[in-house]
Image (cartoon, rainbow, N blue to C red; front, side):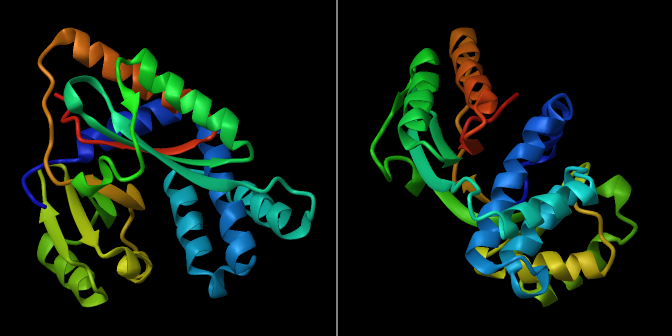
Length: 243
């Protein structure tokens, strides 16, 4: 896992998020709603909800907003019921893209996702067409500047909690876990007071694709921007290695 820094991509994502915090909070609010419906409103008995709360805090979501989201999901029988849908497809030059959504209208979402791919010169494929190129893993990114613990001590905490791998980059530490062990590892790091810049179960490409043609780069950015603007889209994973 080491040797490829994800931190620059994370920073780029966070900068975009900072310009549209309301949208980010809406997306996390949907994840909280799904977690509450699946496992109840008590974080002590719902690890998925605990993970959502940690993600919310990493994105600077205010505590009262988090609490409101939980109470709304727990107490409103007429609340919107969001269902997950995953789309896979290809961008320019065969780049692989996976789109995770939470939606109350699958037809609308499918149409919007297909439109984003088409406008970027790509196409939506069948289920499983690109997901085999990715590994589903828990990924925790820690900003070195924010972390007081040195690499060796951090490694011991992470590995003792069940992490698969930890790597050191120029500006960050990256902890990788099996998806089933993600919550335990994240909570162990949280207990040690380690601030996490990003903590989520994600899809990590097995190999990366570089785009050299300016038009290809313009087109994939068009697809990614359109997907980012869609409120139904929760996560987008791709194997384009951005320069």
